[in-house]
Amino acid sequence: MALQLGDIAPDFTQQSTAGEVHFHQEIEGKWAVLFSHPKDYTPVCTTELGEVARLKPEFEKRNVKVFGLSVDPLEDHQGWAGDIEDTQGQALNFPLIADADRSVATAYGMIHPNANDTLTVRSVFIIDPNKKVRLTITYPASTGRNFDEILRVIDSLQLTADYQVATPVNWKDGEDVIIVPQVTNEEAKTKFPKGFKELKPYLRVTPQPNRN
Ligand code: BEZ
Image 1: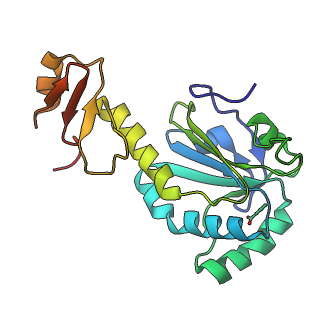
Image 2 (image 1 turned 60 degrees about the horizontal axis):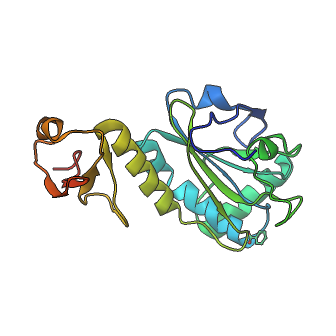
């Protein structure tokens, strides 16, 4: 069965461009993003990996470790890395897992046989410090992902974990957030000193707690 939200992300040991990855050990105490791309030496994937490398400081600020993956061998990853730097102006600076035996792709359901029976699709998993899967998305091979959106989801998940707030449609960092239903109005008065507006008993908004 496909991995679902709340499941423990499967552990694995696999080769990567940054040495052997012992997944659970490397993500201990951190958030993680594990994403697959279909194939090395392909155009859309080249742009995605350059962008993730460029965004590395943004992931680090959020205590997130990022891992890319495809079922290509390590030598291909190493050769392709030069092309990523040449064309995207950004060297690969995070582990790119070489899942040649497809063990990780299989455990995470990254191969969708009716789309392509050998290549991984563009999967993304956000994993929290308890190693639980908190987001899964799947894009087709021909559409490059928006990694700003991945950062936005991480910001939202971390706000929920830290402050018991949820984020509304199209929320952007700095905008008002929603108090989760589990928090009573009495509790909200102390938890959210900037105050809150009750539009309906189930819809209460407050300024983003970790912004001035
Ligand atoms: C690409 O990265 O450009 C790509 C990879 C596999 C299939 C189609 C496009």
